[in-house]
Every structure is written in structure tokens, then in C-alpha cells.
Length: 484
Image (cartoon, rainbow, N blue to C red; front, side, top):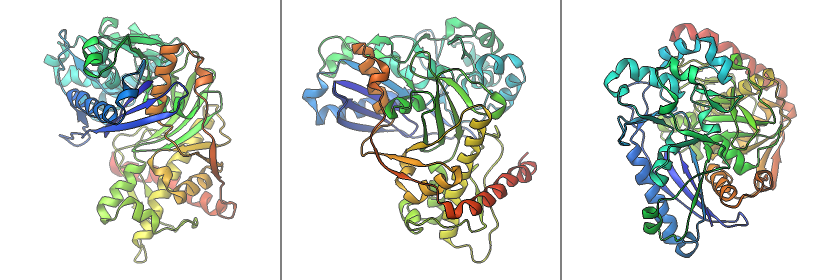
């Protein structure tokens, strides 16, 4: 048996698979986000441990015999979080999360240093780890002085599981400290934020062994024998391993809290000015590009909170048949935007409202706004040299057929639906645990799921969607001056 642990923003998911990759079961532990100030987003690392214990206990209770046979553990996690620990492994402050934008001034200052884009292949985004440390250095110098190690969220879980300070390439590529082409820490970039290699974890590939489960935890969990912990992956690379998006040109669209358009690459293809992320993949000698929007299902959930209707009810009111855009446009920049704008200050908007703009019209505009934001990502990926012929849809938002039809039409490519099953980050993490424990061929393990169906672009609405996308594109520069 192989265990995948996925540390998300809203919870930890534990998934158990057998040697044939059949899912035995899964369980969850819940997490909350603290937002003490506007633009801030934090979590206590102790809560990650509690949520992991809850998820493991739930899984073990349902499948005690199978759980006792675990031989490998894979880790996946929310990226970019700054978890600061002192020389005795004590957490110095709450972790600053991926969607925290407080360090936008520090991010701009680091990004102005040409070495960062040249070595990392990416813009220094406010959500990345390095600017957060620059912020702590400036605003909390007494904490910065005590930092012995900076760990990404899943790697703090690894420290708890194994006692080791280890990270891997896909997650570390989102720190702004990794030489992404060479797959190693850059002493030069670390020094630019007042840090050294000694304060970083060791680096391995996601498929490598990266510690063993502590004997006390193994005994507590009822596992006998040695349990290997894999390097693992950042959440999107882990999802790609779960989806089999590991060979050049394979792509998926993820409609989760944030939205991601992810393409696997056989070589390193950076184009930072496009705001496309060029990161290492979890598999050796493989990279990936992705465009990221900060609010996907988050935008629909916001609309749900305002209207008092569930997300499912709102999308249900639209029916199954895709409609032409109404003329109302929604910009989903509720917490700023990454690709293609790299703008932490911009905020969302409805444009074109009239007396006739019903709740259904607003829901349609929200879904279209997210679809057009993903189209922005597609155009950015194309500009960085990656063509996408089709995508597979994953994430909670992919349950809406209407939304997927809107995305297919906005992108102009077919959207495949995987066969029933859970092929997300926890499954990808479990696959990495299997590979690390057995030495299996990563490509042979990370195969794509069967396709249950395909949603084609609606040809009759192509022109209407293109016109609506042009309106959408024109609005960002128009409202930018109001936000800045």
C-alpha cells in the first residue's frame, strides 16, 4: 500500500492506493485560513499536523489492515508558503501562504534585479517565497534573525514525518531561489534576500527517496517495517502526476480555488515577461509551464455568498446549453491576478450591468470571466512557445458541464473529462510514494486516466465569444488606473 498526503489550503487529504494503483480509500482533515489584514493569508503549521493526523486516523479507521501495509508515502502541498523555523525546529510565526499579497513592494524590488528572472525563469510574484522573507526581514527583523530553515508547507510535514529537512524541484521552483534550468539552489539569489544555502532544505527529485517515517509515528499508526517518504511535488505538479500529464505537450485545466492551465514540457522553456510560470516537474529532466489565475471556483463561491444560493444551484439555473455572452462582463480579480498581469492590487468588477441583469446573467458572467481569464493563460503559454491542442479538466468546478462548455469555446480546444475517479494531487502523491518505494519507471506509473467524454467548442458561438473576449481584454487597462 502507498499513501498520498495532499496539504491543501482548505484541508489535508490522505489517499491509500495499492500496488496496482487502485484507490483503496481516502479521508480528509479540515483547515481554515487566517486573514488578519487585507491581502494577508496565513495558517499555523501545527494545524497542518492536526489535519494530517485527522485524515490519517479517518483512513486508518476505515481500512486498518490495508493501512498497516503502507510501504511508501508521497507528499503534495500548496506551494510558495514561507514556514520559518528556528534552530530547535520551533515555528517562528504563522506561515505566509501562496495567496498572501502583502509583499508586493518587496516582490517588485527583487523582480527589478535581472538575476531573478534570468536564473529562475519567472517573474518574482508577491505570492512567491523570497519576497515574503524580504518582507519579514524588513517588518519583523527579530524573527528574521532567528530563521534557521525556510520550509515549504509540505516539507514542514516531511520534517514532522521524518525529522529531515528536504524539498524537491517542483515546489522549490516557486520560491524565486531555484536555478530552474540547473535544478539547484542559487546562492546568489539567496544572498539577495539575506539568506544562505544552509537555511534551505536539501533538494531531491520528486520520485526520489526523501527520508523514512519516524519509528514513533509508524508505531502510532500501526505500520511495521520501514516506510519510504518520496520527494513529492507541489500541488499542481502532483496533480499532473495523478493525471498522467508528464509527457511533452500534455495539458490540463484545473478549476479549483485558483485556476491553472498546466502544460508538461520535455525541456526548459522560460518566458518570464508573459507571467507564465516555468517550473521543474516532479519527474527528473522534465519541466512544465503553467498560467495561474487566483480566483476560479473562489469567484463562484464569492457570488454564492453574495446571492445566498449554493454554487450548484447557481450553475443549475443556467441549464446545460451554452448561451451567447449577454454583454455583462465579470473580471475575476478578487485577490489580484497572476497570469498575465502580475498585479496584486487590481480587484474584480462587473461591467455592463442593466435593469435586466438578473442573477442568472451575473452567474453566466462569472463563469465566462473565469473562462476568459484562462484564455489569457492560453495566449500567454502560446507566446512562451507551448501549443495546446486539447486539455483535460479537473477540480471542483469541472462538475459544471456549462462551465466546461464555456471554457472549451473560449479556448477553442476540446475539453476531455476523465473517467470517474480521483486523479488529483493526493493520487499523484501516492504514485510518487510508490515510485520512490519500489523504483518503478515514473512514465510507466504516471499514465493518464481513460476519457469518459469530450466537450467540444460550440462552433455557433465562436464569434460571440471572440467579441466578448475582446471586451474582457479591454477592461483590465481601463480599470487598472482606478486600482493603482
